[in-house]
Length: 226
Image 1 (cartoon, rainbow, N blue to C red):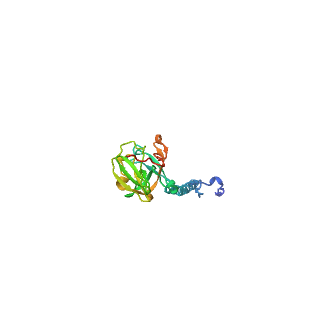
Image 2 (image 1 turned 90 degrees about the horizontal axis):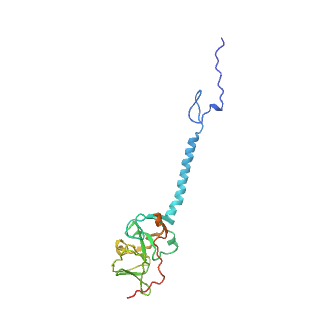
């Protein structure tokens, strides 16, 4: 009888495994798993995307535009609670705020809160409220000019007051005068508190508009008739 001999098994490419497992003769070595590489590459790409998004989005939010949601009735019916606005923060870096602009600003008594109102009085002017009318007093001539306000569709108030603005202050009021806490109550808004003007009303879709609520006054306001 011939002695029993063991022939070495010829290994070829079919014996290699790409994933952790066993060949015919027991455990085999593994190569770099493609699935693990894909997972690592995916995580790297996600990280790169997140960094790129931060580089683009954060400066955009800080210096160019940011979203706000209207809450409250102070600007009814021009703006309603729940409306989604994009606020332009660039324009006022180039030109000063104008009378009639709808602006978002930090509440002077609590800068963590944001308010939306309409600019009524400009730096240096005096504003007089009487018998439901708004009167602008020219800082140079002292002439009184009646402010026409077609955006007021609700009741006017019977406030009686006069306020003078410094060269860095704006007088703001809500369009819903009887329901608005504004410069009549807590004073003027410093220029540095103004974030920007309402640029786009995105939601609801039926109210989509650019520069929503903005009103351009005549250069020369009509004189008040006694």
